[in-house]
Length: 395
Image (cartoon, rainbow, N blue to C red; front, side, top):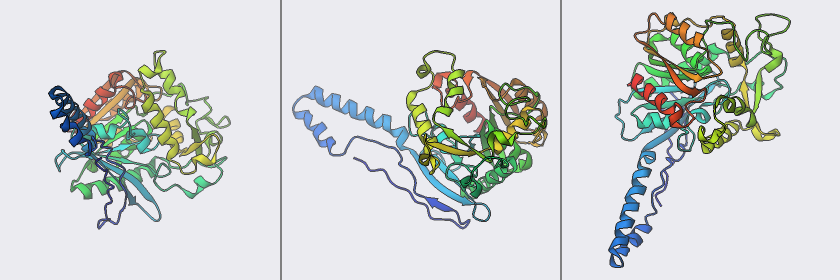
């Protein structure tokens, strides 16, 4: 059998640390079987023809996966803070392939969100196979990036950790690193939900570093009404109207496997959820999310930690407070909204479009019948359209 190669990159002059790469995931027929297959020629010509056909089909089906290479890095930001990033590329893509950075949302970190090791579970690999150089990061406090020391302490009664300004610093560190690595001056940004809020915030501060901006299911403003976390929800301090209730979340929160699927299942409009969401993708998503936190198995049931700063920022956005100004963005901006999204609202997309007055191009697309988790749903439920829209916008 062809062996997967473990790729390790030495640090460059920027001083980043390289981690061993995961498997390239290629699985081709064992080499020792080839003589046995072709030995059938002396026994039965039809059998030989069948074996050759099966061999060609196996190699053809493995080829797209085998072309994808993954490399993991830790990028130093300041002090002891290191930000994780994975590079996902296709061996057949040109060296000047457009670079795009994928930014995760409020709970689940980058790899669990965008690079699952199952068919239909890796937006990163699918974008790479369409000719993009893809990067997946973890904001501080998530996944393999450095966690604040206070995340090892009880969360109750403390200020929420990792607000948008800190996330923007982390994005900037990775954007600068990508620019050096690929010898470019700008990088495309794709953000999902809170990740889109962070990406928009960043693009408004550093417009000259962003080649294209894609916001999927982003909050922004335009309404003070939200079904889950607006006024008079548990997210609002009952004693101080318009203030985030830190007693609800504290500095971070714990997330179990079960907590990942309630709102997802409710968003799917058919009884057979497996027809909409591949069970293999769902299982890989939950497994990767739990595994993203080395402390997860110390709790029963296992759970992973996520900072609460994303929820505080989102609360202020949903009650109408403006955390960033889209009029400062100059990059071509694609606003994507899932029709069945529970997070963003039509008013968010409408106000974004109104405020993006200096973006070189603006396009708003409603992904018909898609859920908040469209990039993990089956292709016919919005995922295929998402990939096509993103690829066309960036390239």
